[in-house]
Length: 166
Image 1 (cartoon, rainbow, N blue to C red):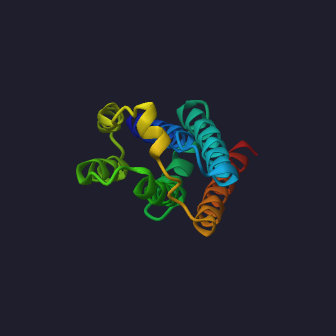
Image 2 (image 1 turned 90 degrees about the vertical axis):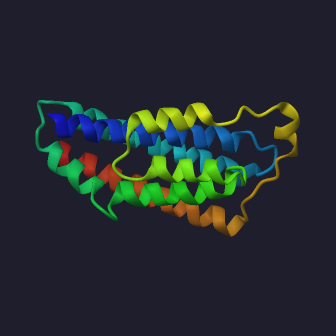
């Protein structure tokens, strides 16, 4: 039971972080279709992760604990999603070193919900002037790579859902 709560809390933390990253991406005036593709894939990943979390929390299906362990193993699907998030964060966070360190620490496994909450609270509020000056930090090729990674993660989350719901 405690393991299940830990897995669910880690997934919740990842979903919250993906939400903040998506919100930050949306503050860019530039980016157009590339920005939209990244945000859509982040949204899709969040939806799938919420379904996984709901299944992990469902006590009627204890077999989900094993699936959750597989999803969370080193270099597993959640670790790969984490890596993709780090690549995005590296580009969108201000160059302020302590903020980047805080993001990386919050993304390290196991995720601790209180650390993620503290990180989210520490993110600077951007003024409209700052937002208008922000330049889109990604090249088209990098966006395509990130979208492929997110699509792959979503596929793995979907397979996990189908496998345990069969």
